[in-house]
Image (cartoon, rainbow, N blue to C red):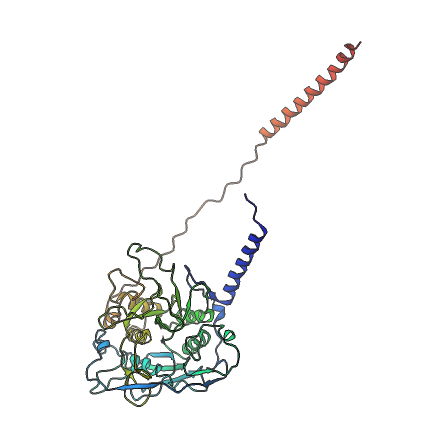
Length: 462
């Protein structure tokens, strides 16, 4: 064996230390492995509040008002939520919206304040014109003459403000010292406050959690999202809560590189090998991750692909409740005109509404069984699954009513009785004894021969 050089040993030791350190800090591996889950990193229960002093830096976003259509908006026609409402409208379900806050609206009568991790509020202030639109897609009530309504109009909304693009930390530290954790907002909000918000939502009695936010990082260095993974596991595995999250949108400062699609020449290749961008909490196994499609069912060009994408729903040119006034909005106003309601952020709440409908109609199902039902009743792509739309576009009526046989679980093998091991046989020393005896005899013969040869040599001398 070739001996290791000293510097090779040092590198190996440092690598092992780095791996152990990453595991201890909750830094998930970037390639070819799934994220790490450490239950010990679950945030303790606490009252919602910012981790640091914050202040508003920019003006609140201005929603773009739109007329209330008499027909169902185009983006929602394919899902046909109205076909499910004679069976269930989501009554009894509390859907937590972890977002930019939800402003009170006449068509959200069941709105509940859940807390504020951005400022000193209660979660019922949406300065970013985002969370209110998300909540409306989930639970906006039907109204006479209006074709718009949320997918589960009888569900209640628990609003937890976790991020905002218009608030920032009151801090004079250099930027490089502020980037210790990935952020899911340009202003304030990171994976730690998101983990705390999930814990708060679960402890507040939510049955479904919608997270229309994502933190993206390029692969290569891991993701310090240990508390977030622990919070997701706590919600789903320990407290039986369905967690729905957006897959993420291409563009911006973080989600820059698209992940590879399925290779038709290698259909059986592991999709966890070789992706370029990690999206959290989307990449956790227990999360129902939602990609976006257009109204015709084709994948949206902005939707971030990944091996963690489970299903898809419409996410382009949406209409929902306005955070300003009592009407509807279809986007926000910017310097270049109207920024439309487009993104996986608006596909996720439609799936959260489906989860609320299923939970209301089938309360005996666990959170994981609800997720399995939604996936198995979706309109699957030709290949059965792909990293853009997962198992396909959700079907609310099928998810609620179809006969779905639970996925079989591998039964543990019966144990087989085995005899006790036989005692080891007594060691056979005969070969050794024969060898020793032979050696002794040879030595004796040699000694006798030497002794007999001495007188003969003396006689032969002159």
